[in-house]
Image (tube, one colour):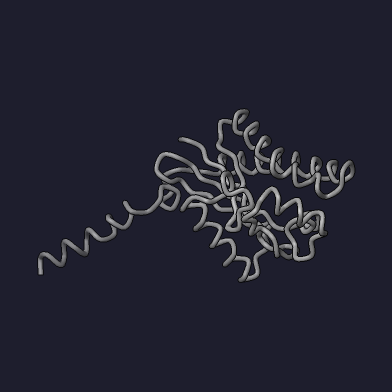
Length: 190
């Protein structure tokens, strides 16, 4: 009987120790959340005009170069300027070397898809957590009209050809408007 009493008393302590720091309220992440949101806005605010400019200058095929070359450069620049690791990830990564999610990101992306299936919009989806000695933040990236030109169901023949040449194992098509394409993923050492 005495052993059961000790186990009963230790259980809440052990559960509390196993929770991530953010769940236990050990760290207030609101300032980090706000900083991460600003970095995501900066990323998106830099990428979208570059895509539109490339399309205006050289058509949709030119936009493929922006996403494959310029988007990683934007992430690198933001990482260098902010001290955060900044990238984009997807369950259907087009650029496998830079956009394949790690275990944490995969779990969050699956949760984002579940949340969307339950009626939440991609625009409102974010997730943050302190994991060990780092802060992790993800913001869902929903498919916009512009994205459908290279990520939708009906691709122009020149776009299909260019994608096949650059990404022979491409799986990042077949999306519909508003669907979660992936996420911005940020991390910062604490």
